[in-house]
Amino acid sequence: MSKAFQYGAAAGVAVLLFTSLAQAHPQLQSAEPAAGTTAPAPKQIRIIFNEAVIPQFSGIELRDPSGKLIPVGKSDTDRANKKILIVPMKQDLAPGDYKVDWHAVSDDTHRVKGSYSFSVGR
Ligand SMILES: [Cu+2]
Image (spheres, rainbow, N blue to C red):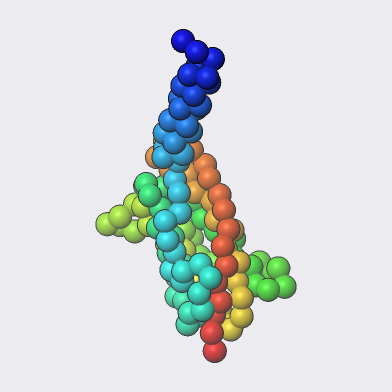
């Protein structure tokens, strides 16, 4: 076996390993309001993952443009689809930009987190 072939094969295995690991973790697929969009004040924030998440260990921190934490309700998953995390709003969000720092734990107990922003229009 040539050295070049050995390196190539090792790289291929590494890519396969990385891909299967990545697929085994919850990933954000979409959100409502969607990232980067301007929407009316939402009654709830919905985040759709690629796999079921555990609501007790999943949720968001919502911040206004000044970085102030906005209180939100208790996270839950959609009864019909455990891939959808639902966070009810406790108040009408004033027009402006908001940042969502989310975290989620999937059924396989893997924890992931991320953040995105959306805006509330007038
Ligand atoms: Cu995982």
